[in-house]
Amino acid sequence: MTSSIIDLQKISHSYFRDDVEIPVLKQLTLAIEPASFVALLGPSGSGKTTVLNLMAGFDRPTRGRVSINQTTVSHLSDRQLAKWRANTLGFIFQFYNLIPVLTAAENVELPLLLTSLSRVQRAKHVTTALRLVGLGDRMTHYPRQLSGGQEQRVAIARAIVMDPKILLADEPTGNLDGEAADEIMTLLQRLNAEQGKTIVLVTHDLEAAQRATSICKLQKGRLV
Image (cartoon, rainbow, N blue to C red; front, side):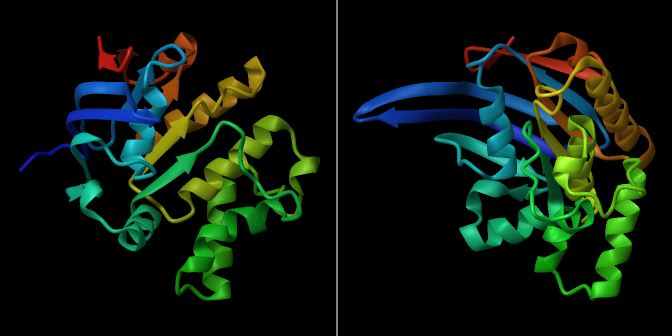
């Protein structure tokens, strides 16, 4: 049995426009070990975000097999997939996806509302996650009261509040200035080194990619 926590075997993925097949990924094979920090680097249109969406189960491959933490993701029903995703991975988006009318703590708590945890237990998880990202003093602030870097840290706290083994980050610094981007990359490095999180980072920024422990370059749907 493979020791990889993420295992993509001969993945091909296409979109269809009318009757025309548009290939995005072509026979891509990639294995990622537990507690790795891997950057998927490539220009726009190289297929890197598609790889991340396949890992998260947001898309299903046209051909090939996606195995995450010994589970073949493409074999799961939509209901099974939602439960598996909640317990296995956290997803970090470029544009934060915070709800403006909720405080930082309430935004982080959202994934916990689908669990059987009590209100007191949820509050403990939220406090731990926000302190871990350095925002223990911003719990009652709304997104409009935070900087872009702080909003992204709230989003990261939301991604880790269920203590997933895997974090998938889609251009997490793409909407930030240099200083805030550096803070986010340092935080991701800490989560990898100190918490043992397996992190897959999608980026077109070589400087961000170099903060990972290994880099995989994609070009036109293939690893190069």
